[in-house]
Image 1: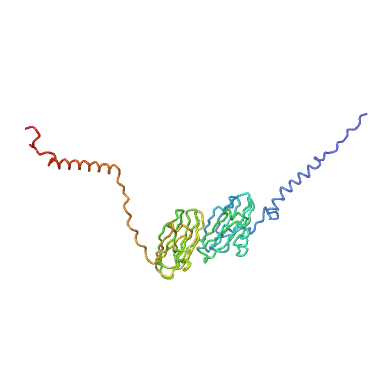
Image 2 (image 1 turned 90 degrees about the vertical axis):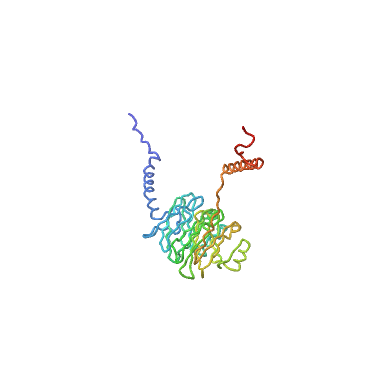
Length: 344
């Protein structure tokens, strides 16, 4: 009589397999649901929001360079703006938008000083994004803020100092006359003559200055008309007479800043760049207000005589000299018919 077959107890892995499958299903279904409801965020999103209906939408990407792309954003004054932010890098970054217009933070500030500035002055938006995350910042600008510029930075230590900053410019034309000026790395204003013909005085003038190079500059305007500044006297002059406006043009191609000022009457106003050495190398211009500038002087001829023309002229001149010499010794050249020396 044979013994009954023995029953092998189930292996531990086989017993645990149903529970493992069930756990995976719960994780697969549950984790996205939890994340969708915000209970398991990828990273804190300070100021996180969604785009609002009727808002103008612009996009700013955050990179590990570190940098914002694009660095310069333009929106109309009086508009509501939803800024779509995307972190394209492997490090956390912030989009922190200054609340104070026309302030350019110095890159020499320490991380603690940058924090202190925003703690003291506030921000219009402050969004922190983890690697690969995205978010929104909703801001509004009233029409009275036209022609202003707001700087945005990353406040993660040393990212701003390494170049992670940008500017949101309000481009609507304000109540004044709008002019355009450019700065170049050749240390020149292009053009270096501006003209405004206001209907009445005092007159508000708004100059949009765009940097076409990499160097930082200033647009500094003398407060008095018909005053001639020189590299040797402008420092003392501005100590005694504050400029009508002194706008810092940020470094980098495409950087813009508005120089807004009011003039009391017509005249010729000189503007210069105060960066050491720039004015001395010719970086200045003239603003004619109330009348047109005089026409430029006629351009001197730059025609160049070709070498072969000069050489041909020299040959003809030499031949003429020889003929004149021969004629002087013989009395006539060529000899008259029937003169001595030929066949009779």
